[in-house]
Image (cartoon, rainbow, N blue to C red; front, side, top):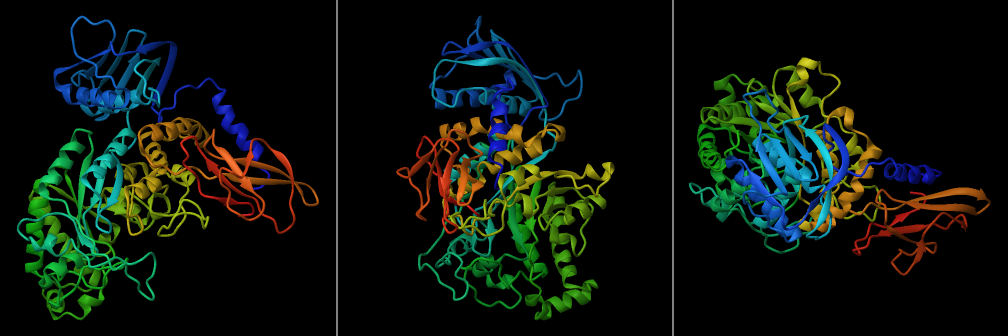
Length: 598
């Protein structure tokens, strides 16, 4: 990090001086800016094709919420925003394709139904990040469509439960950046969060744990002695599904099996091989107890899936399938008998027997199955889709065998990983995934041929919540990393440019403030350039421009009362002295404290 603060400043400012005034993320396929502006005011109206009422209503509601303007539909208007469906009989279009034409008299968004929605999101990014009733929108022509069909975000609501209101906000945050798949993790060892009417104990017992482990106190174990519970009723799930559908977000529910199932087993002990009594797990990690692969247990889960599939209209059901310990099965006479009867030689084969039986049932109901990449280990059908999380190998193997895959490797896509190596970072599960690394991700592995690459559906980020208990913590972990991922999965590969993205991101910091999102303020970078013995030039920069920097040299953590940095200065430091710095933005939001030499 030393000696590079001047080039960083030049790069950031060069973006602002190249004539670019649009800060759209993800980057569209093509943008052509013209002279002139469309002057938005309360007199502007919305007109739309008959089938586009939902999109028009979405735009209308957004404008009312953020700009206190609710345009009306009326004939013979001079200034308008028009939503027009593409004529698919004339040519074929991408399912999410759209065109925007902004002139001095009109804004016309043309596209598929989903495309018009995404065009609206682009239009909203041309509006100010402050509440105004009158403002200018630059005249521009935009053509856009996504690179990948699966643009996903995951949320674990089993380890920590989140309200209906926050789940809706999560979906809104996704949709604004054109993410279209919400992977909803609803069951695990630490809690069962979905109402199943046929088996009420799943929520009566399985949604409650007697306490939660404190931080990372595994050995010795320390619990907080506070009961924890929560689940979604089927009516609440229907409400969320409807909300997501209007935002062109498909929800993929995950019902874990045969591992990560202790909450279900706590409710119904007969689901395990030995019928022993278990509590809902209170510590993090996985349980050693798993479902017994008997016909009765499989039927139990088929009955669960009947209710799940009735609630979620999307084509995919996620069955988990990860981290299944073999010890429980090795001790089971029932499992031994199943292995002999079915000619199964290995315990991964036992899991394959369980998963493949479940998949046949899912297919019989007109749905598709997706699971974590461990389901490959014992063999899967050609119809199964794979979520590659243990690196990229699972996705590569799947694509080479003709199975569709979603790429979500931990090194690039686990947003529960730390955002810096700084000890001041809030508690996280570990790992290191900075914003730039997220942006650098390429979902299509180089090991695949062009023919095999078509089996890569896209990518998604996973948000596991062992150490994330509040909405504010979730937002801190996903923003701005989700914004970077949105460009990875939507924009064309040739459009990606890190410093161009950083320049456009500046406006989105303001948008996140405007929309009430608790994003992570980029920490300051401290650079010391040696001049002479104990003398240095001090530079402090950040990925976020217009931050105020404060620093100390006495080892204390800086505050807004500390020395304020405004420009590069000469400074004298002893060999043991360190500079500590913090970034504070206009709203008072702060970055973590950084230290020179780290």
